[in-house]
Every structure is written in C-alpha cells, then in structure tokens.
Image 1 (cartoon, rainbow, N blue to C red):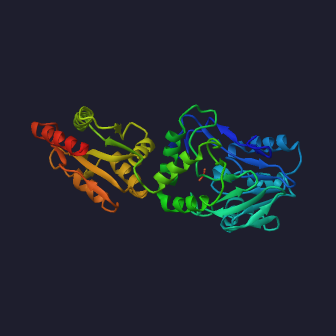
Image 2 (image 1 turned 135 degrees about the vertical axis):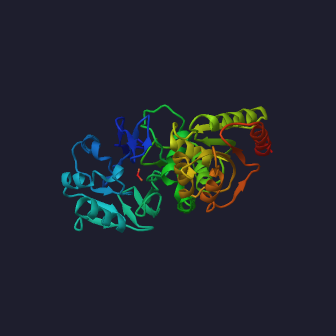
Image 3 (image 1 turned 90 degrees about the vertical axis):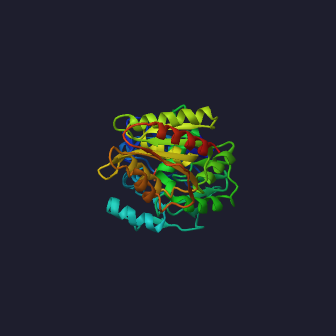
Length: 383
Ligand code: FEO
C-alpha cells in the first residue's frame, strides 16, 4: 500500500529487450498503476500490452472482485494505455476519465473513444471519490501532448505520469538518479520548457508523495528529486566534469582521446568520463553530455562527413536542445580532415556553447604537434 487508501497495482517487466524501441534496460522496467479506494474507486492508468491480464488480476485482488468506478488516463503512450479497452470490456459500468486529446488517441488506438462512458477533464477539473478529490493539471509534452497529472489533496499525492520516472523494475537495487537521468534526458529531454511549466504548477501544491508511471514511489526528501528535475529541465550542467565522446576506426583517434583523458586527470580535473560511441550505450553518452559542464567530441572524417555514430550522437544532443556547455573538438582524417568543420556546423543551432581552443587535428596518427595541441587543450579545459 502507498497510503491507507492507495494501492500499487503495477507490473514488473524483466523480459523487455528495448524500452520504447531503443533504450536498453538491463534491470527491466516498471509500468506503474495505482488504485484509490474510497466511496468511489479509481484506477490510475493501465500497463504495457504484455501485462494487461496480470494487471486486471491485481485490480481484482485489491477489490475482491468488485468493479472499479473510474479509470483515470494520464498518458496515452502504449506502455500505460494498452489496457484501456480490456478494462472497459471487463467493467462495463466503469467510466474513463481523460483529456480531450487522450480520447482522440483512444479512438485511433482502440476504434472507440467510449463516448457514452467518459468524463473529459481539463486544467483544474476535479473528480470526487469521497474523501479523495483529484485535481487535474495539464502537462502537455511531458512527454506527449495529451498528458496530464493529478493531485489528491487528501493524501497529498501527485500522480506525475512519466515525470519522476526511471528505467528499471521496482526490484532493481540501483541509484535512483543514474537511471532517472538517463530516462529523463533520453525521453523527456527535448521538453525542458514544458517540464519547467509543470514544476511551477507543482510548486503550488503541498506534495508528500509522488506516484510516477515508472520507477519507485517517492515519499521522502522530495526536494532532492524536484531540484534534479529543475536542473535537468533548465539545461544547467548538474556536475563539473568532462565527457569525451569519440569514435575511432583503427585506434588512432582513441589514442588521442586516451592521452587527453590522462592529461586531464593528471591536471586534477574533477571527473573525466570517456565513451566509445560505437560500442557503449548511446543513451548513457547522451545522459553524460547533459550531466557534465564540458564535452570533447573526437571523430574521424568519413565519406566527406563524420563517422556515423558521432553524427547520430550529435543529432541526439541537438534534438534535445543541448546548450550551456563548453565544447572542444578533435578531428582525424588521413588526407583531408574536415570532421571539426562538420561538427561545428551541426552544433550551430545550439544556444550558449563555448568552444575551447585549440582544436586538435590528427592527420592519420598522433604526432609531436598533435600531442602538444592535446596538452594545450587539457590546460584550457581545466582552467
Ligand atoms: Fe512511459 Fe511516455 O510513456
């Protein structure tokens, strides 16, 4: 139980290969759902399609077979909405409560928008269950346009949809921030302004418990989580440190990166994180780019462009509004290096980037000149 009246009825997914079709989740995924028992009962969201029967069993177990009155839908992404049609079929007397846009999506997903069994809610709408009264707060683009969150003033609970979620099933024994950050930056990172808007609305509420759709229920030290969300959504670096993200075809660019990392460490740089974009988790690299205040991009010239993994990485950054960071570039090219020029062009749209000099140019392999250049770059990055 979350509180005397609010039960957890979510499911744990340990068989998923890629969450949302792209994110590795070594510790699985939780699809959370909650049930509020009062004079009227309300189920808060559904679960992924592979777990709908298990979720319906969870509802039956809590209600001893009684029928719930409401299904509240905060978000229509299928990891939370796949059970709507089965729920409405299992409980013909139930009413579904959602935003107008969510009902449009229901029609598109299920062929029905449940026109005779629905309540359309919008900003500030309320739903009384008895002692518990839910107030709905719209949260467009956190992370889809139809999203809303709801607040139960009785138990001071915020049902926060994807907000404050993380990768990992609930039995994962791991640091919250690490997988919450990778989740946030990857999935919601583009929508910082919209998250800021939601945080402003949430600041007017007296919140004791946050019930997200993924990851653990948050009951203590809520300021810690809210502060992290404020940092992430305002695109401020969270920590001092240098991420060196690289690709290397035959190892020469890698040697330059290793030399830079060693030099930065010898100079006492707070944190140096190195990632091979072709071999390591792209989402982790993107997370670290937003986590630290400095980034070094090192890649080869390739087909008159840059190496594909670096192109993909920079695209992940720019589409998430990468900004407010210090950037350094290392390029390699055996006959006509131009990777730095391509990378600079790709980053043109980003706000408030400071490019650190010198740019390092490798022609084939490290040379005395490029070693000296790396030493100077390390000094400049540590200033
Ligand atoms: Fe967990 Fe945007 O769905």
